[in-house]
Length: 68
Image: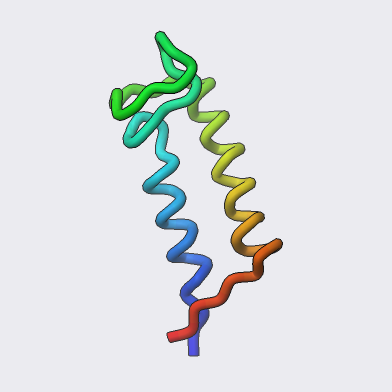
């Protein structure tokens, strides 16, 4: 049996938190923009921090497992 929770959670968070794909914060003109398909260094940094915090939440704090 293999635990699939970590790769599935990491992949979903990466797709959702890619700067510019669904949302971007901080945006270029506004603090929060939707689907502008552009990014900046500040936005990449903010999304990286949020991604790391969500990974810690799901994998360490909540200790989720999905066995298949």
